[in-house]
Image (cartoon, rainbow, N blue to C red):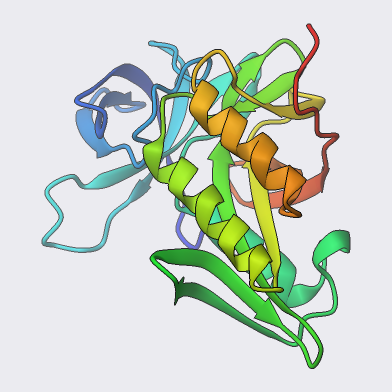
Length: 234
């Protein structure tokens, strides 16, 4: 996924009201950017850190920028929650994810049962629903999800279990938008109910695929699959 327009560099002043962030640009101007990430952003939030924003072309938008990434521990962390869906769709469509190769028809945002699933892929002998989650939380060597309690995420897991019971393939794809982790795990200490539901989903045949994405001001790309630990050991 490439950024079509050059990003704008600045430093974070503060994030507030979940969806807003004040940033001072390199020319000294202070702007307010939209933050797509509704979670706590724990371990991906540092006042004074370098950030990149994308300019907004829609004249109806009140905020003129969208917050894309922040530099933590010397590397970029992608905080725009819209991008993992695009990354997943492109990778499945192009056959670049080893465990999700071989699909000839791929669509986004497909409604099934009581949910809208991020990606639907099929070929002549198989149908597959893929739910995608953005991961920015880091503890030790692990990327963790979620970073705040998510009843919506729990519902998505329950829908995937029902899809699996119908005989179709169901996949939970976690996109870790940072390169300073070595494995993925659920965040039991933040959302026990979600983690327990993920464990139940695994037992019912839902697949878990965590992948790591390299984030740069020019592009974001899936780098590799990460090891998965249901219960991390620190």
